[in-house]
Image 1 (cartoon, rainbow, N blue to C red):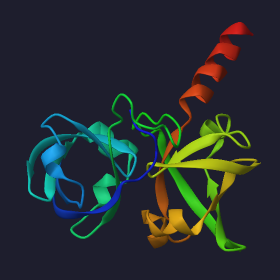
Image 2: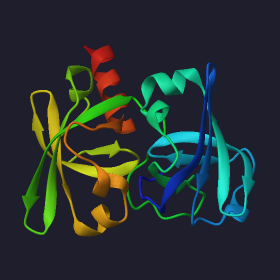
Image 3: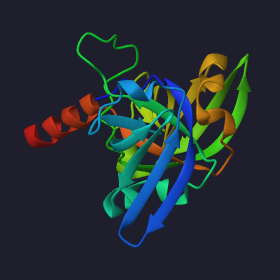
Length: 197
């Protein structure tokens, strides 16, 4: 479980793509001595397991199922990624509960200036739009964000300068695909109302 508050922008130091999965070596400023083998780390919102580590780097394996739901298959040496270690008991919940189970991809459609912030517009398609509510939460590439506006098959969010500076959103361009995870509460509320009706 995660909060969507990014702790570091890491970088793919080595990507090995095989027929049955991918092995990534990720460099980070996080203290890898604090990472246990088997621990979970959200890598641009995708919960991955630490399988080995060295000073300043850790390795993860990515299954074909995860590759089919994410853009990890396009990661290469030098790709920047958002990193967040898993939530520990007693940690502050500053964002919202994020599982690290990516639902799919959304497309960045437009970027607008919004005062000293940026307004980002995403296309998510009808299968995900039903989970998105104004002032609700979503996770985009692992970042906990508040929905500002809801559109037919998409939504927009405001990105303050701090978030832009400390996440990979600073590198994204229009038509980029990003990881999307719906709010866990929205998923259960919708399921409850479907069963009730």
